[in-house]
Length: 454
RNA sequence: GGCGACGUGGCCAAGUGGUUUAAGGCGGAGGUCUGCAAAACCUCUAUUCGGCGGUUCGAAUCCGCCCGUCGCCUCCA
Picture 1 (cartoon, rainbow, N blue to C red):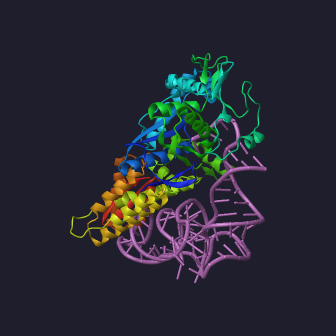
Picture 2 (cartoon, rainbow, N blue to C red):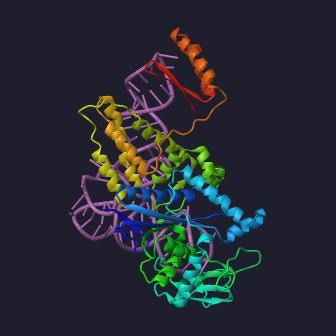
Picture 3 (cartoon, rainbow, N blue to C red):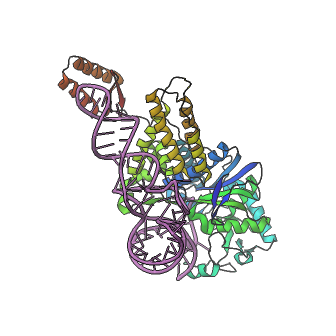
């Protein structure tokens, strides 16, 4: 039985999908810049969720949107002095590059707000017809006070929130708490025709419209970062439930924690590694995923290069254990217990740190089993299966070339071999030092000498 | 002011009433291997869970107070 923490009820609940296919919506990114590791965290968490659900036999239909019309995009386009479509196209490409690099599987559908404009407008019309929204001067607003349980996700009270509200109240609203569904066009901004005149959708409505279109009016899981709870998800709930009458809009609301840094010094030293593509140039996707999955998804993982480095070393343990070869014998390593532990941990609100502990323990058993000469092939296969659920590739990170060609290295290794054979240790060590200086590691195992870059 | 999260070994991080005198990873120490190393593997590495009280036969786990860190309150994964 899979149990997941529902932000809406603030408890772990048994996961029971509405239909044969799990309907999952994950808030994607606003495409005005490269993805950073915070986006990676969210992508990875929900990638693991979908992988695990499939591992447990569910069919999953996952939708992750692109917000491709938004103030930040318009600002960016103005700054760079290019059409806004160029910005969104560029960063959608960048997003997929990052996701692919992190071994995050593509969602079933990646809709864009601009491509679902008829659905967005249709949904707004429904809300107006139902009395939940009103138009004024070419804009449309959602009537928050019309929804009795508004604030149920964030636990906020409208009036208390308004007290703390900063900034000016947009003119045209009946109530300061109301939010825009449709924004009347302003000069030099993208616009679409609508029954209320040219304009563009507000931020929240697109997700409701796209979820309705691509999944249906009631879904199983809605995910995103903790920072989206208010106002974004609160408003999505208000719109969706007011329009469809289907309550709750999503059975389970899942929110991943946000990255934490150790302070100003830290983020400075991180430099551009905060950007996913830069991080991928420095670390393997496996290391980045392990660094993230070693914390529970609802906590706030510490962003620290050292920790990703540690994860890189940890991954090696798994990678090497999986490569252990063994004879096929009657006596084989029993790995079922470890798989059971893995499943138990994952069933409990995706407890990946605990699931990983089972995998690491199994790896140790594999190594010990190899030394004892028992058959570990089933166990290594099991590690492959389980790590796949977590999205690990188990591919060694690309080794950095350091100027020397393979032939040159081979020649030096040969020199050293000769020196060693003649017990000229000083000469042999000198060659080894030379190679190490060039980033080549030498290893004498079982009478054989091998080398590797990095 | 409101809503909420968190404080576990040198670092990261599970565990939320007894099977835990606290998983797992990194680091460290010892060992195997080696000419010596490196790498790899094996073993060990918190009688203790921010502080002080309380509830209980029993608490890291529940309650109260205190100290500290952090997120959100209409830009945000």
